[in-house]
Image (tube, rainbow, N blue to C red; front, side, top):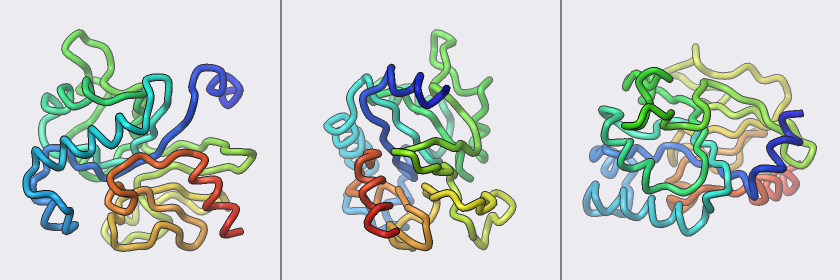
Length: 192
C-alpha cells in the first residue's frame, strides 16, 4: 500500500548521502574539489536543485551535516523535494532526533527520520541504510543482509559505486548530485 500511495504523490525518488553540510574538514578528508565550505555547500545545493523538483522524494542516507541542526534549517529551506533522512553516525552524534529536527515554525525538518527503511524499486526490494552490510568502525549499525539490494552511504569514495549487491550513493561518487531511482534500477539490472 505504501508503494502505491507514494507513486501517486511524487514524480521521482532520489538517493544521496554524506553531504556533510557545515563540515569543512570533509573537503580534505574526501579530497573534494572545493576551495571552501561555502563553495561546497553552494555546489551541492545547486546540483541538488538542478536534479530534484519539489514534487520528488529524496532519501538522504546519512551524514547530512555536522554541528548544530540550526544551520541545517537554513540549508533545508534551499533544497527541493521532500527529504527522508536515514541517520548516519554524524547525525547520531548531532542528536538528530524528531524532537530536535524541527524548523522555526515547529514543522519537521525531514519528511521522515529513521535508521533503516525498505522500499521497492521496479519490483526489487531495496534496503536503505547509512551503513554497508559490513563496516569495521560501526558494525553494530550495519543492516542484516536479507537478500535485498542495499543502497547505502558512509563509505564515501573508499568503496566503488556498485559492490557485492550494494550501491554506494555517497555524494562524492556521484558528482555531488542525487541519484535517481532510474539510475539505481539500471545499475541493478547491469549487475544481475
